[in-house]
Amino acid sequence: MPEGHTVHRIAAEFRNRFSGKTLRVDSPQGRFIDSVLVDGRVLRGASAVGKQMFLDFGDELILRIHLGIYGKWSFREGPVPELVGQVRVRFMVPGLTAELRGPTVCEVIGSEGFNAVRDRLGPDPLNPDLDGSEFKRFARRVSQSATSIALLLMNQEVISGIGNVYRAEILFRARINPHTPGRALRAKQIRALWDDSVMLLNVGVKHGVMITRDDFLEEDPGKSERNFVYKREGQVCRKCRKKIVLELAAGRKLYWCPGCQK
Image (cartoon, helix red, strand yellow):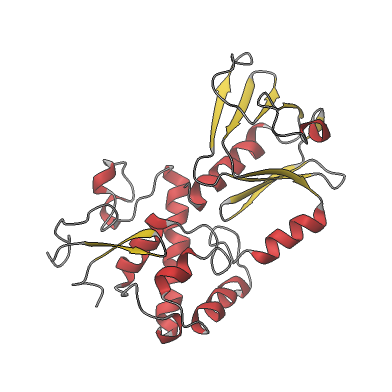
């Protein structure tokens, strides 16, 4: 499943290349029946909250898209391309086509629906937090919960945009055992988790890939080298030389180091 940095990059792509233009919108697959509501309208803006993207067409028409596990985007320059596979919806301007396949959610909502979704989601480390209120929301939800921090970080109502990769890597970098209850964490640990989330997700936006090792933050190394623990089960930890553990937590794979994360 794409994590928050990917969705923010796509929203930026829409802002840079589609905003202010009249879009042709259709649904070759036929499953997005709301395409007629936004076809021929001007895109006013694009934004993201965690793993969800919102395209604003004005007049109470906001397109909400959640990629889920299987959703993906493709951008093609030149004439409208020949259809390949099941395309849920296409967005077209002269010389550029964006195709969306397999999203979990693709629906037109009004401002009331948008506000309801936004209010339900937790704070997004990639969105501005000028007065610190977003961090305070995150800290309050963590510090008042008996749930493990590993599960809290994957809860989109606690923090938006964190997925399996960032969850494993952020906890390793903070040296926090993933089974620690949220309310057992010290205030400075919660602060560190938030600050590292802000930093790492912004790195992901910049590079287009998840890089969590500080010595690779300005490079684009092979996938196996970019992380400390994710998908490195059975291999020795880069810090303490103990073996990385893989277990299941609420049905999702959890990677961590029993040596560093005591």
